[in-house]
Image 1 (cartoon, rainbow, N blue to C red):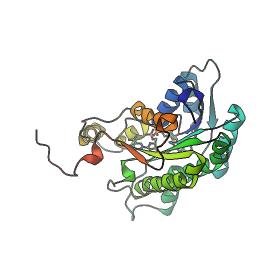
Image 2: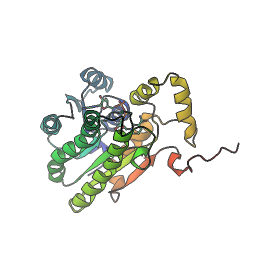
Image 3: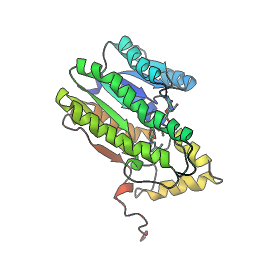
Length: 262
Ligand SMILES: NC(=O)c1ccc[n+]([C@@H]2O[C@H](COP(=O)([O-])OP(=O)(O)OC[C@H]3O[C@@H](n4cnc5c(N)ncnc54)[C@H](O)[C@@H]3O)[C@@H](O)[C@H]2O)c1
């Protein structure tokens, strides 16, 4: 593992939101970056926006809910770059419903994308990280890896499990210099968040409420999460593994329901 400029990285969900910001930041710092996403149009746009003069970026269309696509994405990245030492599992979907409202189909859809895809991509990548002499994986969890919002049982469970996946892989591969960490964002202003807000009759009030529930009084921008992911991928974080870093503007530090005094 090394600094950003020498990284060979695969970013799932790299066509939008947090994954896109991460791909942009890593590329800007000189890394080779494979953007992996199910949205071909947005992937092509992301690639164009990188203005990739020296051909350090590729887009791989993949539906990571399909195990063969997860494996192919890793194989194509290694084929293109010759090596792989950084993986960011950011692909995700948000779905709503309490236990009774959640069909088995919806439960499986969320688990397949939010959890199993991270497992499959990591599993396929680990032999290549080992071959690089070590590497780093960052899983994108959520404040919902630690606590629960109402009415999102599948999403919350998938994000809690992302922490378990992080810790299990971290302890299994630490001796081989493969570090595995999780970032847990609060609300981030991305297309996923805007879609969630649009489900409400009054999206603006949801946006305002989400911003004000964070002690910092606002949501995060995707790049604020990408910066932490980029840190975890490099040697600057050489003794950091098996942990979760909250990027939540103080949200989880607040006692739930605490009244505002000013
Ligand atoms: N936005 C937030 O407030 C927030 C907060 C905490 C955690 N997160 C997590 O951050 C991650 C990124 O979310 P975002 O807000 O950037 O969302 P986003 O919708 O902007 O980006 C997610 C990307 O994942 C891709 N994706 C979805 N299903 C896929 C599949 N089957 N195969 C391949 N790619 C697929 C989408 O096409 C999209 O480009 C997610 O795991 C999400 O749960 C988001």
